[in-house]
Image (cartoon, rainbow, N blue to C red; front, side):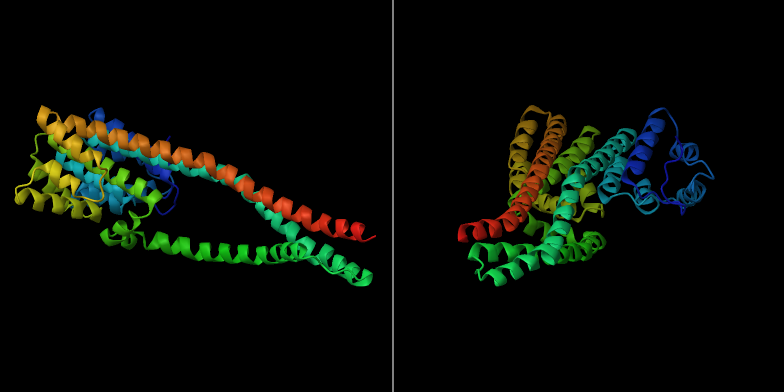
Length: 351
């Protein structure tokens, strides 16, 4: 139960470890524990560096640091989770927020595991096909060419294309792996800079990414605004609270635009319709919720709809990844088969 840390230096690095810890902390807070008591219970000294982490958190609490800052720095949580905890400090739903954040991280970890399982076997087939291509290029093709020269046959143009493909593809694939190996760490280390507003604006112009960005931003904004409104905070004050957080720059930009629109006398639904990061339906939800006095409830419901659509889209994409890779591998096998059989057919026709 307590062995949840993945580093002897006292830092949680695995996403599923972080998710479990958040859920357990939320459960303890719900049962009446203070945050300090929950930390003492979950971070048992001597368990994979838990004592170090416990001491650092205790020192941070004594210095008066906020929970969002502690989770961000000491636990190395994703910025979205830190932002959720920041808002929970204002609307008071800390236990439920921690449990929801834990569920979110566990689902993200589960999604990664599903993706790895989907890619594992097809990538093995691709590597096997590439090894077979290299073997053909080194052993079989030179013998075919020697036989062609001995018999006086000219290689057909289609065979030349197949030969070029089989000879070139392993090198191109190796270059692709090297570029990916250099690009992925760069993106990971520079993710905070890449998630600035100007970059997000550009990414929203790409159809598939636009779906995920708009649904994600709409879900998060609607959820946090609904919690703040439900706990008696006015719309203007809620937007000011959202603007003050530093974990998600895009939310700062959005709330600043909405506040400027309200100052100019425009209704909230019209202001939301002008934000390019939101789904178009959000302005209708805001308008409908303000008319019947259930804005907080309807925002919460709409945020859940956005999140469920994100999950459905992600799961749907996973279903297509494996068939696409298998199709690619099938084309590989066909190319190898034709490269072996075509010279034999040509020689038979020449007899």
